[in-house]
Length: 477
Image (cartoon, rainbow, N blue to C red; front, side, top):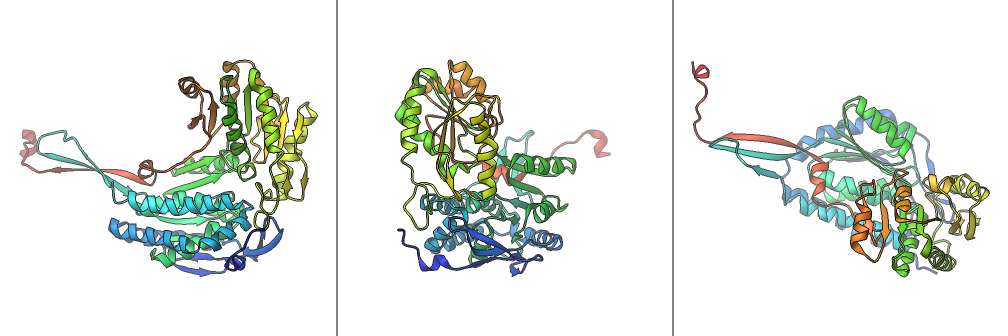
């Protein structure tokens, strides 16, 4: 039995935060459930369209002054933001477990990523503000300056509510932007309320960071279509992301989206199978398979398929499923009954009807789903063609590397993995994969770094003529 800090059992309200002050939402309160216990421990309500508009206008007013704050001061505020989260460690670990249904390890990862993102952004903002460019004529100084975008609308999902918010929030604030955040309905506390409290305590000026909890069709749509945003940043489903990107494109507004994908995990005939099996379980079943980088398709060459499958089934059968707050388990509950029904009844059962075999798992008690391994999966089955977003490992056997590559590239993906003892063979395979991210003999992603500067600023070119220059004769008349 886990020891639960008393501070972690408090109840919470997700308030609307505008201009540094919290206020109740416009709608009735909606309960937020402890996902494993199935009992309310918090509540939220949807911010109205008028509240979303006030939040954006507040951000617009505050942003110009925030952009002028010197880098060292902004850096110290971000570090104070990180300390506020770190000082509440035990409480926030318990909160993340209750609100997301993840294990202690998942909660530690999420909180750690959030703190590190703040610290990384605090460092990066003091290191680079632009560049000195080669002069295009004598006596000219050319500068490229990083300028804040302005006001960022940020919509985050429920699976990693704090760290996925912080991935854009921290660099967004660091580079002088103001942010209006809409957390997911299922996780409005870790993904919104806690961040607002910590930001205010750290000294983030009023209006620079605003939070508008609520549902997607009302609050989310209003924010994503607000005419005074300079960037809408969305992480979530492909369907919603497509709608947001389409609207932004029609209205000449910038949009940044990270959407799901039917990610592939390829095992070539010379792979280290012990390493591949271990990574396959992590890539497919971490946080019950509910991440955008989850490996949803296992494509294995025939000569090693039986050995790979046998090892996977053995290890999956030993995994413990239960309440991660109160028991020592490897997997927690599925986020909602709707999500469980979507992948089990909509993807697993039709695939079994079509001829796939259930090697282990696939049963459930409430939201506690025993991780499933499916064999005999063909490229036409739903568990192969659709993103699963659940603890299911479909295995498809192929006869050649070329066939494996073809199957990888048939579907939209976010991140893929390939396992081989020959790193150069893995590199050659990865170079032919049509996705932005491919890992050889690994399944882990880490984002951030120098690229954040480009994502949250635009470049302004400044030319300074330092010596007298001659112009054409007609210009001097």
